Length: 480
Image 1 (tube, rainbow, N blue to C red):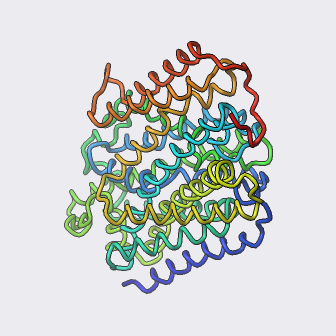
Image 2: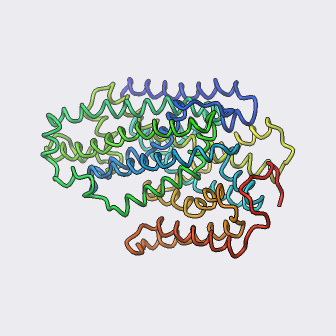
Image 3: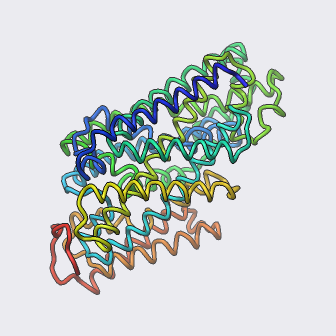
């Protein structure tokens, strides 16, 4: 085991827990814990957004795609997020103007308590699946670092993430995520020149891979790119792990600035894992790396093995901290969202309506732990494609809720029956099409599901209109 690397990882974990502990002593209200008292700056918001968005799928997953059949066009998995962020510069400020803590709170106050409860449960389930993805990837990386059993590494990852998340609330997450984004960006940036040096230079690397690998559109269809863009727009709107961040900004007009900064950072970062996947292929073809060593845990984990076996210690530390930061900065926001949704939209509304802030914070922390533990247990037994689980979870969430959420801000005739119709038909159609792997008219399942969701929402809202036509939200404890 590399002692220098071990010390670096221990210090990284200690730093994250210290940040959580520091902010735990600066939480005085539920607003402090859930939305950082709505005082987050544009720069910090952009940092925490970037760290939340860049997870294992956008690092190891893109690396795997770049090495495999997709090549440089794997950058579209991140470019599509950049385009979605630019679209969100219009949508997010309008959402931020409404003083809410969770997406399910909006549904409750817009459409009633029953809808709010259903949406809260509907939101929690994908969050567990997405946390599972990050835990698995983080554990695989840590097991490579420490040369320990996967379950031991998984336990360490889960304990660290749960601890600093439950302690610091959103204030702690904003600080730790921003720091982790710096680690992610710098860690990947340092690996690239050393990788190309192993192949002599960039030109030599390019000459040793098929020309199709250097084409931005060779390995991905326009339909898939459009589907990714729409899917990410929907999820940046309704995904609690992202929306909780811009709920916390001080002024709604600062949201656009933060999204633009985030988009620029992701645009630059998009090339890092793709280039590393391509140069790995080039080095393998040139006989300068041993593929049996690099891909011992599969192509997805080739990058950590490549760096661990062929690069100097300071690069190894930088890359492994970056990879751990990528998985942990996504996992923390996911389990944080589970706790906040349960405490604010289930416990405070249906179990104890008179709960004080201190009790709501306590319940939030308890269910951050519960969400983390459930994801941990599932991660022990799951052996699944991380990209497939990621795409399925965020697509399912978006398919049923995007239009009732976004149109609810502007369309007075939106109704409860319309919401349930959108949720049912949008979700069911996506599950059916995705599981059966059906492409209607050559379109990805999420595009068809969103169309069905939209039609169901509008049609049923017109057939069963609301008693009162208004886009205004009710008071916090509105009861149907």
